Amino acid sequence: MNNQYVIFCINLLYEIPSFILLVIIEIILLIPSNRKIFYSSFFKIIFFNGLFDILSFVTFTIHHRLPNYGILVEFYNDLFMKEVDVRSVEFLRSLSTIGQLIGMFFLCFNRFTSVYFQVRYDNIWRYLLPVYYVTVTVLPILLTFPILLDKMIYKPFDRSNISFGFKGRWMTYNARWYNSYMVTSILNLLFLTLCAIINFSTLFLLIRYKRSAESKVQDVGSNHTMNFSMEKKFFLLAVVCFTGQLIFALSGVSYNLIILLFYS
Image 1 (cartoon, rainbow, N blue to C red):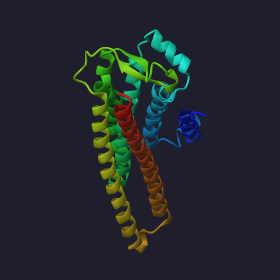
Image 2 (cartoon, one colour; image 1 turned 135 degrees about the vertical axis):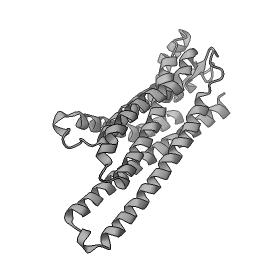
Image 3 (cartoon, rainbow, N blue to C red; image 1 turned 60 degrees about the vertical axis):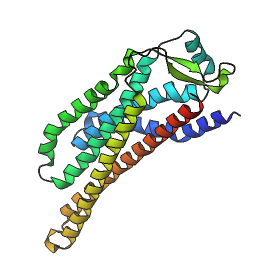
Image 4 (cartoon, rainbow, N blue to C red; image 1 turned 90 degrees about the horizontal axis):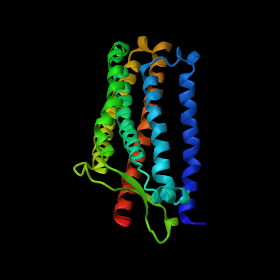
């Protein structure tokens, strides 16, 4: 069996279950009877971020993974022969990636405010949540719209043997000044650094909060412990999401470097 197919199948072993779990979470958050349980802005951000995660998985699989690993070769060769314009797919892929980064930043910031502004948390996010929706929707469009100015088609890595796979190639250069890889790399560095700083700050607050509670006997009640336990679990969830985004970003950078060095 071709090594590309082996790697592709290994990726599917953990990516397909993860994708199914993501869809299940989105459905659970959508069920009307669960809205009273998941009313917090934290869960609203998780749901909206999940939409970008789904879009990113679908577009990355269709636009990169399948053609790059030589899957459905005849289909992508047909698109190549007909010079089908796939700039819209590239646009959605880049848009969803940036949307994920911005969404992750707001998710981490949400956890920080819940610990730092415990009493005012709900009131603060009554105003910040609309800001989140506008930012995570509009900013990715503003940062990726130049992609729509040029035509992209699939081209084989090796025309003498199309089984090696295909990659999107630009056919026009109207937006020569725009570099999608550079923009995404800078945003990855910026937002992931901010998320790391926020997460460490939240962790510091949680540790200080716990020590303060333990030093005061009168404060160690069941409600107090329950709140700390809940905040800790939500924080850990945010950290897990951040770690996943970090791994995805590093793998994306590595992949682009390999393509640039060996296939360009």
